[in-house]
Length: 144
Image (cartoon, rainbow, N blue to C red; front, side, top):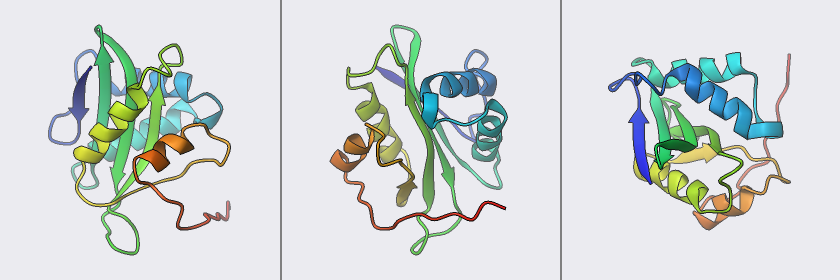
């Protein structure tokens, strides 16, 4: 498995554009995903030099098998420096260890702490726990 990392320093790839990434995430996040336009906003944030983040694409046999998107928060301590917004593995490739590899690459490629949100019934929760993530808070939101 090889990795390609995109951020404000690298820009987009000719073949792996933000639209390709957004479509992959939309397809493979399934019920845990967002609308394509929201995914594209997240990618634009990660690629913005005034904001920042990393998009990590896992490739095996010349095919995208997984993607993570981390956005930089610009904070530290009380709010982690990074938030993992998206991670998805091609649904036909699940159970082969790609999720763990791409998540480890995300951890290794990012400076500072990482927060993520996961629904209690999401099977990926066990993966995050095995990598050292813990549940310190219960998130609550007011949607206006």
